[in-house]
Image (tube, rainbow over all chains, first blue to last red; front, side, top):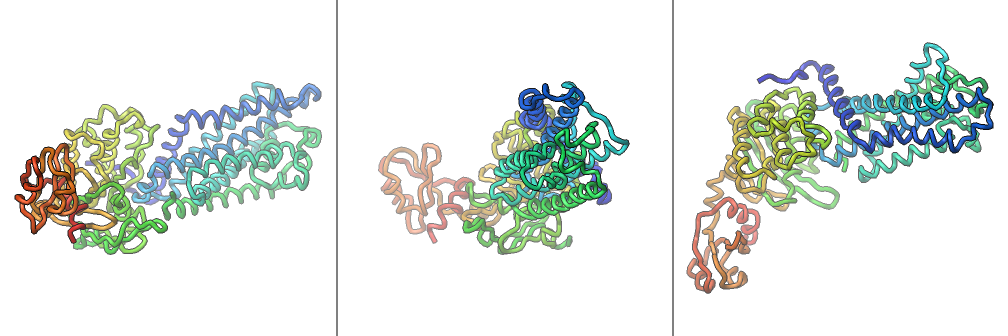
Length: 283
Length: 296
């Protein structure tokens, strides 16, 4: 009778358990048609409605229209990512809580960090696919993208990572503190919608914010979106494109802030997973 | 882990959710190479007790030790827990579910393949578990729980929803672990599972009402009355029995009071036939869970 391989050192076991949670999460996510619709199809549809029905591109100069489309595609891509990191992530936790599987996990020598990292890894891949899908729809409808530098892709991915860790940590904490876990899903949908509209469509229309629009260069969803726009879209004039004021978040401080969001999100998520899901009896 | 310590030692285990008490001061000891069967009606806290023994639920008061160490310090290394419906995710296949759990426990073995073959599930491993019947889910859950090479297995109603022809195969798979020296705690409310037990603990109202070897518990049951046919009302007969009469198919069964005789019951039963029979495990269940407390 052979014992399965993960009996090795702790780091090897952490890797095996993280991979196990990631594989399981990816399988359950891609087999859930409702999740695929809301995370991928709906944001793409939302983008199409915006650029063909809500925004009058006929009055814009020809060289501005592709930029506006690209900016909106990135905005809705962030919307898709936020939906995955908040709502889809909390759904996967709630399914395991309500299915009684955390009572099972707590009786296993499972690392709570592996649980979170595995689920997050799957969500990151899923969110990246959702963002790519919206950007592809954008490209198919005339959006123009252009890399600002070799660092553009890594910076955009850092923004997605920071947004993801921050949002997923909120999802874990909500599942832990909302009296009945299933209601956490409703809260996360509300947070996604509020974050989108209160920041002027994830920061691409700061003019919608009546007072103190500078915060769109601070809050994680808008900051990640605006950094992605800066690095992926050939915007000539941020004011003419409706992206200012404030100006583009180009300081090193903005990258440091994103890193801080990622670090704080990771710490909060691991602590919440340990405390609420493995240290308690979330109902 | 101490070699001399019992597999499980629970002392004064209480569990309450808010004002609702579920367990009320349970004491239990389980030794190596034995099967302890926890029998009780639905909703009496058997699953919560098992979760406390496994360390996945913290008792409100009391202490649980496994092999001499507090269960929380063990961290799940010495035990394997089966919770009814707790393993499978609908959108995953049986094989994918097994692969997931294989990576979670360092002592998971490929024994699960032999168990699913013995239980007749091997052909269905690539189906998603949402297409499994309850019995098929129990087969998968048992195979995964027993695949862990642990000295202690805690199994929550492993035979629930399993047809009688398959129950013996479940018992055989569990017995193999016991023959290798493991301790097993099983919950059930099916009398057929008594055949598996070395000892039975009857659980009701959050406490253990009786515990002992199956034969000793059967010996402790008063004379069992079997009443067949229409005749006297149940009310007219109940002054001669301990607690209430229990309906069993088209017959009524009960436990003769110490100061009553079969002739007393026969006279009161009118046209019904009255006889005494050997106690079954169902009788033992009814006596220790329901009837005995009314006689004290």
